Length: 469
Ligand SMILES: [Zn+2]
Image (cartoon, rainbow, N blue to C red; front, side, top):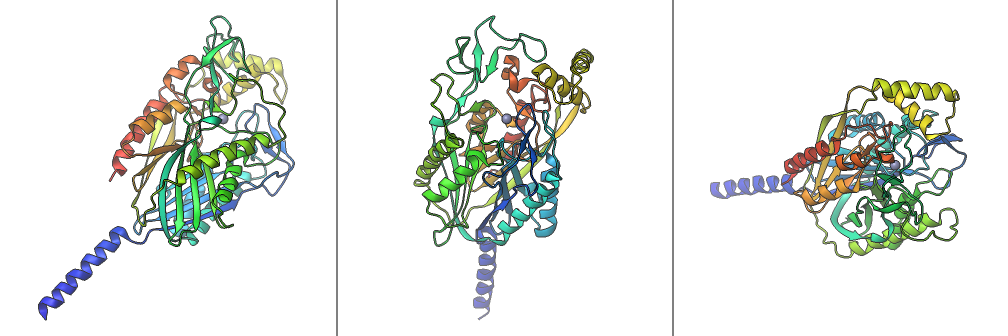
């Protein structure tokens, strides 16, 4: 009798331990509308500010919450060009207070649509109508709703490919044919977006990453809850109104291909696309496109690749989750005294509120950057979902860097979400800094030290080793 009692106790302890280790895996998702309520509103992504007077298609903070029985993770992808750290931090704080998911277990990012309200000052656009505070609140509401919707789930991931929609936009220019850059120099070796079949350029200056990484969530009964994808394409563009660009169109397309119901949340996150766009400058210009036509072409192509990859997924009833982050100091390329004097001189001569020329616009950026501290803190984060690795970098990350992370990561597969947890401008490699070109030109859109990518990649590798099982 006593033996039976002891073995029952042992059995109870063993089963309790087992359920604590495996638990019930749960997932929930929600697409929170973040469209501005008050129009017109500033939209950014260009050298001059734009004003949206209408909503073409509604924009969202697309949220997923996962729970392995011990650890909860939240992933959010917002239809915005870039979102500053303060907006994300405030949302994370609310979520931590209300539902207990620690801020370090939340990954928030922006897609880089160029048709969304300005959330941080960049070039001649500034946030207005309290949109950043509105956005922050909506992100927290989205995560909380995704958390409310959690149900026992199956999970799987995979990698597809679509090489047809990505082109490196930086091109080597022939010796002696470089124009003067906004700082009055002719030392740049590459030019961004040279135009179709430009006789002055030789070849593109970097690779592309054709991978379409996917993470799929289904209920125990097999109903699709959400699909998070990752593709390294800067954006497509084409609407002068509020729009989620191809990122939103992908979400819709993949839902159609999966025959999913209205509660399904499709998500496209931005991979490492700092130097990659959708224009094939080696080819001939395409014929006339209707507004939004190219967005639909790209979304449909990438959604088909994601759908194909889904066919090879082996779903699991449980995976363990982990998250780690580190805040690292990164140096700022501060302007010199001579740079500042030149900039002040240009602005004095220009003497206008809306600047027209590139030297004027970059002169303004030089003055603004001269007030930056010598170092800024940046959140570098990784998540492990089963054997899948996800890296998060608060920059517009060059494709070379994403490919290196995929190659070196101890977790296979791994992908990187750009513009995550804050905004610290473009992230070229030190080699690309030497080549110059738009993405390296010092502005609030490109100000980190030239070695920043080396420091970030090495930090990520340390964090990936830490979360590795
Ligand atoms: Zn950009």
